[in-house]
Amino acid sequence: PALDGDSDAPHVQRDRRKRWEMAVQNQMRDTLVGSGFIEVVTHSFVHPNQNGIIEPTRPSVLLDNPLSPDLSAMRTSLAASMLSVVQWNSNRKVYNLRIFEMGRVFWAKPEGLPDEPVHLCLMMTGQRANPHWDVKSEQLDFFDIKGIAEVVLNRFALDKVDTEPYDGAGTLFNTNQSAVFLADQIPIGVCGAVSQRVLVYYTIREPVWMCQ
Image (cartoon, rainbow, N blue to C red; front, side, top):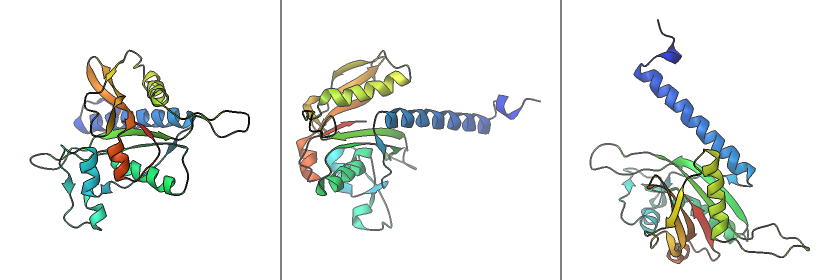
């Protein structure tokens, strides 16, 4: 008889895929931590308005018995909850952030339970280097977040990825400061500056550079 590890039984295939996904996620974490990022873990529950400001065309999955009105919807994007982390730090004058989260988002379907894909989101704010008397401070820009995204892509042999202007940038991203990554003409990620409209909603005054 075949050993479990060599079996094509559905439960073995599911376990094998789950182990592979966890290995990939752990490699991503190692790559980002090695690049100076800190992992955060945020609520999957958000206010419906947070979903609406970030992805206005995607309906929210609403909870029947929420803990509070501010936690009454499942997030449709990691940005909805990660921007709250940036806001919390900004209110305490912590401006130099390098954070990431890997977690599920929740996309409503016409029938049945929502889809729950696992996404990765990175955010950067503040200066390129820590303040030092002998170093001139420089603010982060588009090429910093793009460079980090390329480090992650190269880690998984996705070095043949095209970059094009992102034509859907009017909601979450600034139109003139964002790009989409394409692998075989399939969009696999977007990076750029968070739009002023979203920053105003979260009362964040400094630029936020993001990739998801």
